Image (cartoon, rainbow, N blue to C red; front, top):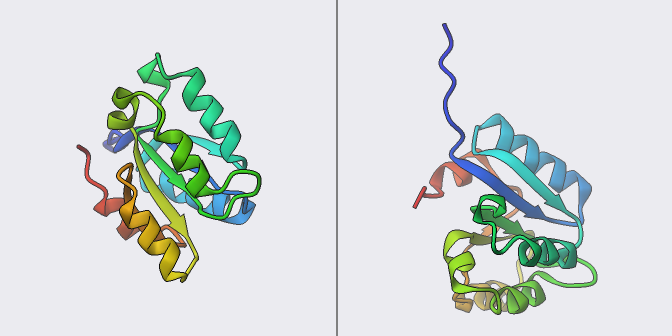
Length: 136
């Protein structure tokens, strides 16, 4: 008899314009039982619209958001500036992680200084990284 375990998180959002990174991260999230549902966005504006449209319905909110820094139209940092204007209850529920392949120290330091970012993680997302994310 196999025992099914509950996913660590109900919803996880990924914002990345690289379809390969998006696919790999989504597969890893599902395969490791990290998230039950994955919300995928290649456009940070669309992801922000989703959060704004659903801000009064916490059950539709992702508990974890992974965003790449370099996304066209609206960068990860621009997304975070808009995210900062969202209600505090939403920001308390959603934990945001920058996921990037950048080695630019300025970008890394800028992400460390953002009070709404939980952490900076170098791509690719790994099983060990997902396991290190606390449930709180």
